Image 1: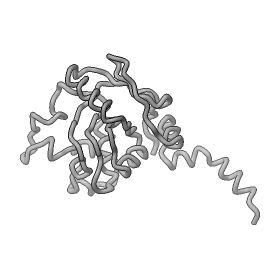
Image 2: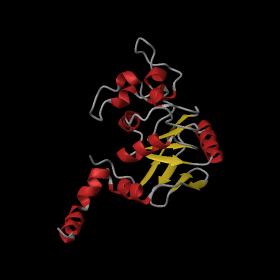
Image 3: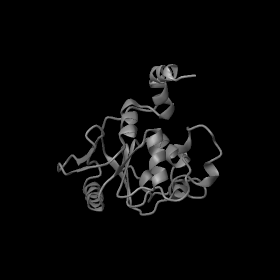
Image 4: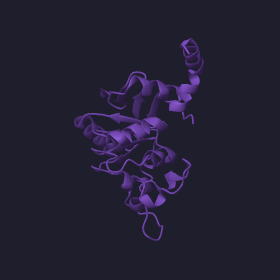
Length: 198
């Protein structure tokens, strides 16, 4: 399944300065029965977003109209816990196209890269700078430049580089998942196979 191509994303951001956010908090286990990658955004951070009767919790950031955007800025060790890929699906389905943190759990990071969400790991100092900038101006914009592998605070020009594997970078720029990538080089695969001795 192809995803949105990712090149340069300029957007305001939603701050979630909580450390050790695990995948059960991102998408509780009771919502994992579906097999299609749709509808999970409705239950992103479900137990933090809603009361038991389904009414929104006014003090949770996703229910605060002060904040919006396609970038989620999380605390250190974002996506820890179980390996459920549904957590990445929920982030994508809600509308986020990038998550910024000073540290990601490896499996969550990989799941994000597989479905078109860019995990941008920054230094703890730059993460704190971003949180402070959003606190000062909730509409402040970040620019995430995937080809250049940089994240920039537009208001000040402060910038950091981030790492990503070349393979995943190319896939995200082209909007490919792993199957799309293989289909795109099908002729090369067939050509290589034809040259193999039988």
